[in-house]
Length: 424
Image 1 (cartoon, one colour):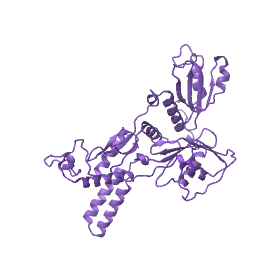
Image 2 (image 1 turned 30 degrees about the horizontal axis):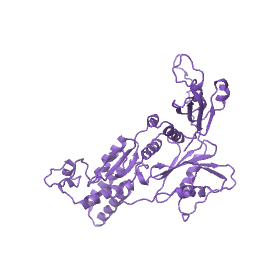
Image 3 (image 1 turned 135 degrees about the vertical axis):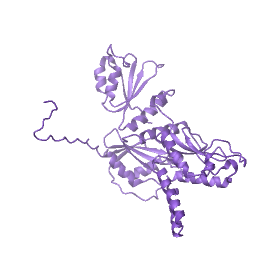
Image 4 (image 1 turned 120 degrees about the horizontal axis):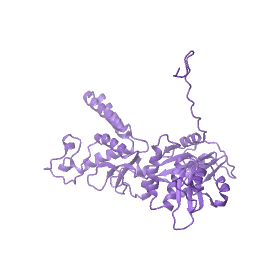
């Protein structure tokens, strides 16, 4: 995946021709050593030629920079069209060639997630950075601090427990501060039944899975019913609760979803002209990228819509989307039968994440790093019940559009008769 597709042997006697053949483009560069026991040098750079010259030209005696001229046998590199593609190419190459330290090289941090732990009989919801197949996970958030800030306001809307004690349901147990403030159903001293607690937990999961839409809709419905029944005090209380819920959910990013349902398409500009790189995210895991080459003559041209449907594999009975049938070449699209989207699951409290491979956490971290970056390059579109084909087509057009020129600041006019310098 995202292989280093170009390279050449390094000969110090022909270094001018060697450096001239390297493009002055952003990409990922690998310097291969002469001895098999030595470790290769892998970097990402905004200019491949400049990086190669810095590493392989004859060093200055006073310079302390790393120089590999005496140990380099060859280089391999990949030209990238976006920072996202560059980061992923570096990740895959580092994981393959430097398995013992690729996390440190990329400074990979575990993603910040909100977890509903299913190991306990009375589950609780809390922030974590460890993925295991033992609960429901929602995320990723921008940071641990952002996840804690959201959880603090969000959990005030419900009455599930926040303590870390083991529940024995002892009526003599004094309880905690949350039970005294009526902010917890208090299973610790048998303040509720197991069914009542599970129902409250299901409301938490449904609210997170619908980005708060289910909770706000229910409160709006109850408020309208109270107003119609002339229960104005109850309507006022529901209105305050609705405002509190809207405030707590307002800052929830679009990327924060149930991990196994986190399906999206990330569009990036390709390294070649009139090329779009399509990265599909399925259940938090990144698929093999697909490169859509527009304007390249193809013996069997297909419409953009047909390419997208084969790549994302949605049943043919889905409504057709009109698109220009410009000649289009595709690279990296595996057979559609192997790319089926997993069906979305219901809120079964016996379910949760069923598999947590190491790459799941790493892919979530890489996607979160790009999504929360400012400014963010490229486009992302999420799948709900089906893929949003029309929006994907419009997003492809925006990615292909030439970048807008930088704005030139207007010069402030100097009033007539005044000196342009402060010194007289």
